[in-house]
Amino acid sequence: MVAYDFQAWLAPAVSSGQKTTTIRAPRKDNRHAKPGDRLQLFTGMRTKACRKLVDPDPTCAHVEAVTIDRDGIRYSAGVECSTPDVVAQRNGFADFEAMAGWIKEAHGLPFSGFLI
Image (cartoon, rainbow, N blue to C red):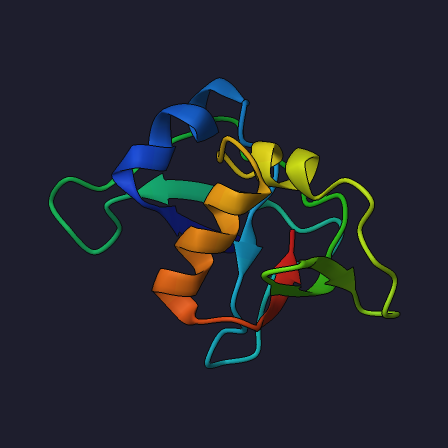
C-alpha cells in the first residue's frame, strides 16, 4: 500500500474521481506505486486536518516514468505524449500550460518523475 498526499485545492477533484492520475517526483526512499498496489489518497497528511479522500482504496493500474518540459511530456522510452492537455486534465489542471507552470514553480523544468 502506498499513501499519497494532495494539496487542498486538488482534494475535490480527487474525491470526485475527476483527477484520475498523479505525477510524482521520485521519493527519497525510491518507493512509488506499482501496478496492483492499493493507493491511500489523503489531504493534509501529518496535520490535524488529515482526511482520506477516497474509500475504498483504488488500485494502481499503471506507472510510467515521464519527463516534462515547456514543450510537452515524454515517456521513459523517449516517446512524445500526443495528448499533453488530456494528461493535464486527468491531473486536475485546465490544460498542459497550467500544469507545466505549476510543475515549474514546484519542482523546476525539466522535471523527471512518475505518472501514476
